[in-house]
Amino acid sequence: MIKLDNVILGMHDDGKGGKTEATVDTYLEPLIEELAIKHPEWKFEHHYARRSFVDNTGQVAWVYERMKVVDKYEELGQIGIDYTRSGKRFYISNHRVEAMRERGSGVKTTDIKKAIRHVDKFFGRKNLNEKLAEAREKARNVIENISREKYYKHQGVWNVIQDDARKYIAENIQAFMAATNNHKKAEEFPVAVQELDHANKVREMAVNNKSYLVFIEGMNYSVSLGQSLPKIMTSEELPTFIRMGIGMLKLVEDSTLITNIGFRVDESTFVVLPQSEENHE
Image (tube, rainbow, N blue to C red; front, top):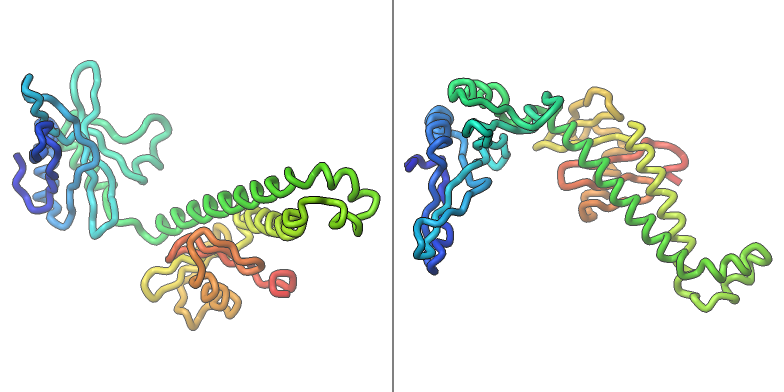
């Protein structure tokens, strides 16, 4: 069993009401041990464990078949074993490995030296460009979710009032409010339409690289318009509309859209709409 401070072997249910310490798969153990000694700044933590019975008494053991590598709370990737017809092999994977793979997932090898070289080559804290790419993807996912949420809200309101609307709205829009029995939903409908239209507009701008992605790291603000190279600025160097927009977005919860300003992805990632008369009426 590995006895190193940076290899975290957790305690698990032993099947008899107690706890038992997990072990690392005997095939994987030499690789984990060598990497843990080589990189004492990394932590090797449980990612997937196999549960197996020790004997017919019901006692169970837990064996780690895949471990995640962490450096100061940032996950660098996963190291584990992969099964083939001929036996086991090492499995190495993280965002860089996946980006280069056209087919399949992870790098797989039976050579421990190659496995170590792959880890040394691909594992490391994300650089700014990788963080920005991740932030951009998160931003697009958030606006897709916001847009979808507004769509469902819009459709929910419309489904309630549509029969009345079809009957009266074409003839006399002024009489519509008096004609429907769903006064509350009817009152919400104009706002729901406005919110949906704005969310769709912001989503289109984000997808088409027409909005500003702002990624905050420490005291630095990385600002990029679409896919353009980022400009690193201090808070004082930010354009006024971006600084004011970030100030407002910092006050709201994650995945929140502010009309004509932009939306908040999380505490470090924001999307700000470009300055225009329409966005700052």
